[in-house]
Length: 111
Length: 240
Image (cartoon, rainbow over all chains, first blue to last red):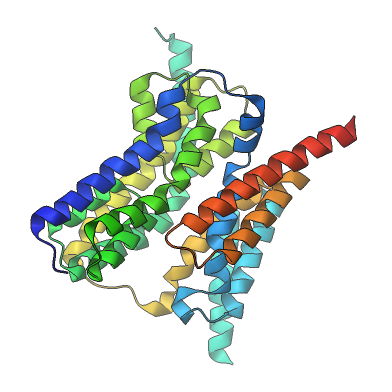
């Protein structure tokens, strides 16, 4: 890294302010003014629209295996989703997914 | 002036949030430690690494920025790439408006500062499930979810900087984050429209994975939101 201390602080502060402004944007500016019905409809799908697309490449091409498909990680991902849909409970899905990951890793290590 | 029963209710919403946020300590601990370790290795001072964590408080963007800084990218490129990674939070911000838009400005400022993946998804799931919540309850719940996560995020970054001990690869911690995200979103898939949106998000996300820093994800998210809304409209027409 060849930046000066001032340059590093510039990056940190602009990133901090920029990130805050992104997070504050709509919540801050719109406040409680009414929004069009179709926009509200779109926004209802925000979580299911962002997270699956963010996670999918990490599941198919994990960084830890240099992008090679890994059946153990795939199995853990599938288990997490199924338990999450079945129990509707985040904690059970995390625990079930992590247990699957470590159990499958253990079994693969033994084979 | 809030009445005393309102205050009691806000308090119980806050504690419900604390309880629902607690599992995410599992993720905050290893990733914050890792950030501290990597930041120190990259040559940041203790103050700079802590400044990063406290001012930006967004794991993925912090790691992305650090990676580019190690490669000596231009300052403008570091900023552009890292902020692009965070642009999804503008969508989070917009989708909170119907629930929190009526809160006082200072409360919206606090929520905005603490609006990261875990606090957002956990809170929005609760707001959808309980439409009877007041705006005060919703803000209290959001701050409750952030309460267990944030101190660990800050504290463990500090530990990572000081201890500088990397976590062994054998723990497969790289995959804890995907598991957390999947666990957060799976219970929210409640209708055909949600399934369609998630499928579109995955397809476009994979297709555009080569696009620079988060831009592919934005396109995937926008097309998935549109898919969800259109399928919902179509289902309503059919039901009539």
